[in-house]
Length: 462
Ligand SMILES: *[C@@H]1O[C@H](CO)[C@@H](O)[C@H](O)[C@H]1NC(C)=O
View 1 (cartoon, rainbow, N blue to C red):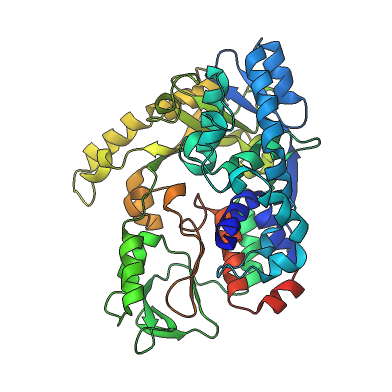
View 2 (cartoon, rainbow, N blue to C red; view 1 turned 30 degrees about the horizontal axis):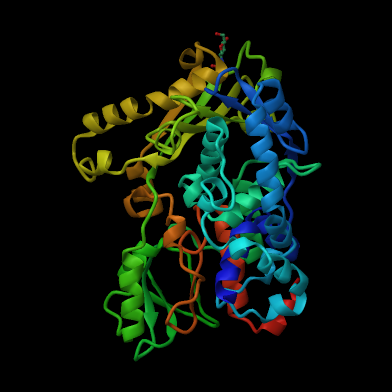
């Protein structure tokens, strides 16, 4: 039970993980708070305002009485789950799920969680399709799908209830804001790198080396050289790459079984990106939002429609908050389909010599991304292009070593923690927590590091 509970907690404390890790390591990033983002493609453009009243006001002004009632009720039902979980910091987690730090320091919150239906362990389905609660308003159902999808890459009913509860709680609490790191997400990475001290770039780990018998990790092989581990190896490689990294090593039966399961971990679909630099002459920047969610084919419909093929698009427009990012007279924007691009469409082009065909496919598939930028900037958006880059699932495959370009394991496929049958080998990243990128790595990386020290030392660290 404690193990499952940990998963629920990990799912819910994500939003603070990077900040917490930075704080503990004495690092800092310049955060620029903002309170709303734009929603396009769902009737009249609207702003999703964080905090207590913004979203409710929107529902009132658009006459969605039933959605409002059900939204309030849903928040009431899930509040206990979100509140208890939100009081337990990410630093209480350990990759080996040893519950001692939790029991010693967070017992009341644990009891709070245990008193919730299902302890939030299961998917959100019962909270929207019954028996716990039934959401009948079609708009609210679609909105929940959209929220869930940006979190987990799957629809609401299949997203962990604890994660949904936390988002419903956190987005709409009084004083809730979003934080943008000045300089872009890269500034968080740079700061974390500064904390670590030394990071070797462009060096691929060829192999994870095990000690004779395969029970303990010895180190990693990089460029033909063995780097010996002092404490252990924390591996953030996508789980589907793990069998390859351990190829040729003597394996225990337990490890072989583990790798069979790893290979079969279900995963979400891939990405499509459009990065552009636009000439901003004559653009009214004050009317633009820092980011948008765009529904290319509309918001309301069944889950298949909402989270389906290239419908939900995120447009990030950071120059509104951080004008220095781009050269004078220009802005940078990033539009992407996240977790809703099929790899199959692209597979045939892998390693092929037909550059022209590949470029044409990129143009064709990125058309929806251009449409979303036009919705934001105006119809003349394409005439403003200074630079343009399209990233495909193959880009993800090649440069990020992502299995079939995936966004990560689906929630149902996640490991219960980062522990492996090899002593000293700990996993972090998107096989332990949904979504690739900084939040997942910071959270599960901290848990992995905690797993390599005693619980006593862990307690002293936060
Ligand atoms: C942007 O467009 C204006 C007007 O057409 C032009 O004068 C200016 O040089 C352009 N700036 C860039 C960076 O291309």
